[in-house]
Length: 340
Image (cartoon, rainbow, N blue to C red; front, side, top):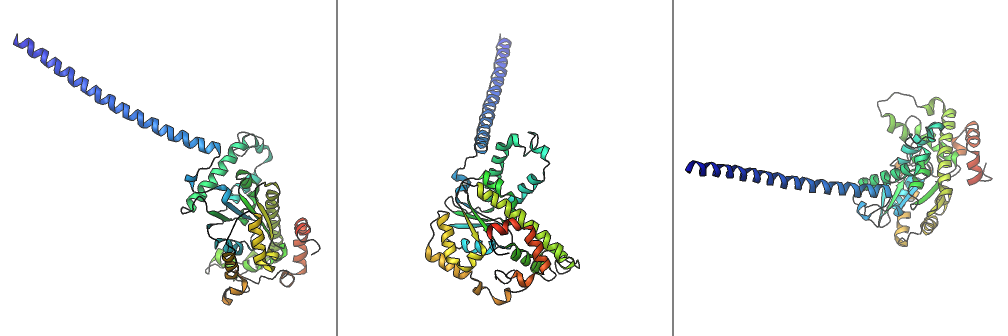
């Protein structure tokens, strides 16, 4: 009898251990399932945000507060960005080159690719990759400017990414846009000076130890023609984006900005519908005036060269001037009529 009771007790103990083990496994399984559900919920929420193209204040970047500066290099964009950066609630994103990233790729794609849904930027799936550009830019802006507050304005200096201006404005239609133009002859003259041996651009790209001769020295006329083509491509792309953009936008000529800096800055902000402290704006204009640039930082070969509209007449040969005028003729006629 004792043996029978002992055997039943052992069986009961084994049953209790199996039951406890199964209970623990069940609890673990339930915890794992709850964790998986939570992760799935977060992923689904994130995907909904991406594919809806919506913006939440948690991202830190409001696309409506983005102010893009497009046009061409050597057109006064650094000067303009510097003045705007002095304004309260303004931060600067300096040359992210995101326009070049997408614009160059899109422009060089074979025509037959654009008609295919298999091509990553094909027309049949344009809505999808436009949303992807939007989120790529917003994420990049947020990571690059972690202290940006939701109500801050982000001034984006992007003249060398102007080839992709239309794509960016399509992806961010509520953004504000500045089209900054300068006489292409003065732009090319400035780049030609900077790219020659001893110039700031040559030194930044080649370093003191480099013995390579600059293309601007070897073939200045060919170099001028190439830079004129770069200018035309960038400004025409930016102009197309400007014409299509339905958000706040303003066209600024460098020459007008130089002649009446404060008045032009006031017009810029009024047109973009942004309120700024007028006294602070006046101080920013004064701080970054040409007269306040140290003399040792100005002159031939320097980043701050001469700030003289029409200076190309002294800097370019007649042959170079004619080359540039021929290549950029449509833009000269639109922005500088009667000045050829």
